[in-house]
Image 1: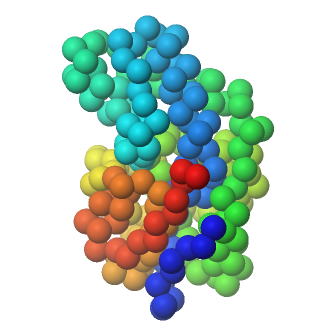
Image 2: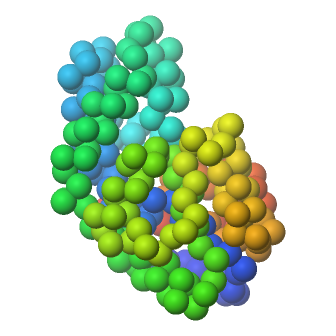
Image 3: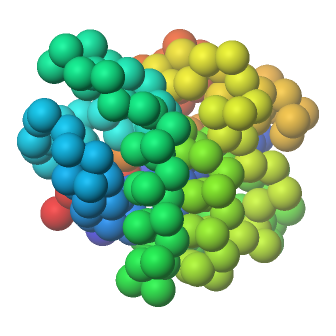
Length: 197
């Protein structure tokens, strides 16, 4: 994988987790599918829809699907089953090598780095742990930390604040369109990480 990095250094670096630091998107899609089947969802969620929704919090996704299909599945139940399924398969996860190498380099150089993920901490922390990346990050932002998730800029702005870096001095690594929209709304440059082979 070749990343199209800007030609200058930044004061802080913010990484999405799923599909960016951790090659977890195929596993997440399988977990979603298992949970939807288990709960008798009246839809089949395609991979295209899944990837288009990358970075949107789980419960928001379920609420949007309920509205679209006139259903009333419980977002918490869907999320919990998905989390349990995903957790049983953590050993399958691998880091996204090119992005993980950059995160390690920035950390070694003493540059501020953070994670800002649309997934709950109960997914992000085990994913980073399973791929050996957890110790790189002192700052991990998840939907519980903000009022609005991606595509709103809140997560990235909070990450910048905790790093002590102005938003314009941050570079975001993202694989999802909602995250790219969020980075732009935060006034940050971004690098697209292709999570779909």
